[in-house]
Amino acid sequence: MVLPVEPEFEQAYTELLLTLENSTLFDKKPVLKKAIPVVSVPERIIQFRVTWEDDDGVINVNRGYRVQFNSALGPYKGGLRFHPTVNLSILKFLGYEQIFKNALTGLSIGGGKGGADFDPKGKSDAEIRRFCSAFMRELSRHIGENTDVPAGDIGVGGREIGYLFGAYKRYRNLWEGVLTGKGLSWGGSLIRPEATGYGLIYYVERMLDYVSPGDTFAGKTVAISGSGNVAQFAALKAIELGAQVVSMSDSKGAYIVATPGTSFSVADVALIANIKLERKELFVLDDAFPTGKFTYLPGARPWIHLGKVDIALPCATQNEISGEEALALVAAGCKFIAEGSNMGSTMDAIEVFETERVKAPGSIWYAPGKAANCGGVAVSGLEMAQNSHRINWTKEQVDEKLKSIMSTCFDNCVNTAIEYSSEKTDGLPSLVKGANIAGFVKVAEAMLDQGDFY
Ligand code: NDP
Image (cartoon, rainbow, N blue to C red; front, side):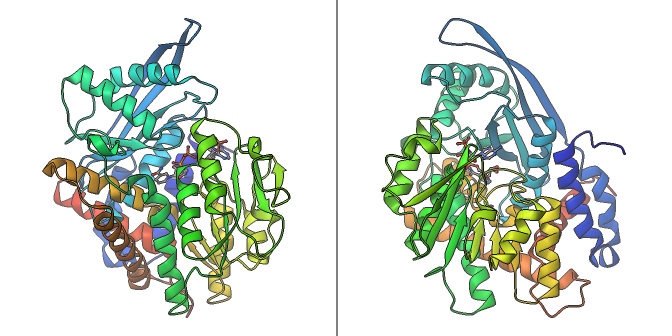
């Protein structure tokens, strides 16, 4: 057996290719098949050394990257991830997904991704600042408001964006919208921190209403993994809409409500947000949470430990639902799975959800991250638009635009799945096919127009 050289990238590539080939797309538009080998190679990869000094005066070295994958629709756009697992396979998979996700937002943004194998955990603020400055020393040569506009991702939040932006300004002597997720008083957009989590919930609202017109989050049981930016705001919006959030987790373990019918509260999520800002593990909250409210499962993900659940929202990292866990979700009665994380489900898990969707029409519906979590990059696109015009929209204006983008994205996925489906089923259309085909067609047609293939 030949092991994949870039397993995560090859998984993302294979998943896209299988859905395109397993549809009528290339019968209807044969020329677009020529785009596949071209779109699957990044336009450019920048890899660089990052040396920085820790609080003990010791020099540390990390690997920094920016994958500038595709600029057919606009400047490269995608987050920066600071995590010890970062490597080219992971950044290429994220950049590849980002191309098609960004196309689904309907905005003029290309796809990219970057980061470093730096571990922010256990670092002081001064160390984070020195690392960000050292990272930007090289990255600043390759990005710009019309070239490449990075944002945050795992390990890169508002504080890191601030340090990175300050460093860029010093190196380039330019104040420009080169990063998104900026502070509100210096070019940031209202609702950007909330956008991915809120957008995920808005997407699922459309799924609920499509299956049973008038159905809402009220009274639904929602399982969430992760406890970072995406998970926190998905939880808060779900709670606001009357759902019961029954789990949250981090890389060390999961908290699950001990009694059916109870939910994480806004106050519980606020406690989580505070300790995550301090880069601490969830379990430090054992004494802070109301006594007996949650059960802590060390080293576990929530999926196989839940009672009845209506909606599952993976919001931590890639491949966080296995085939076995997907089967457990089906057995728990879960009807909707929507990814806040990128490639949250393994290929086996997607197979379980998609097989079940066809086998038992109306029983289960899976939405991939490239559609369901595009709200984050969409509001980043809105931040770029506000920066270009030197204006600020109100919270209500941005939220309204976010809702409209998620709704249009949902319609696009559904309509595209129906248009290119080769399935013989009266069940729900495949959102994974719809998302992949809609994103791919938009990018491939632009590349054809621009002479990238012919
Ligand atoms: P954060 O860094 O804010 O939070 C990440 C969360 O995931 C933390 O709870 C973290 O646990 C957990 N986690 C990270 N790595 C692992 C792992 N290997 N195993 C288990 N848990 C892990 O990141 P975000 O919330 O921004 O990102 C979460 C997901 O959403 C990622 O897949 C990201 O690519 C995706 N996404 C993010 C967007 C955004 O706007 N931020 C936009 C679109 C997608 P711990 O605290 O212990 O490290």
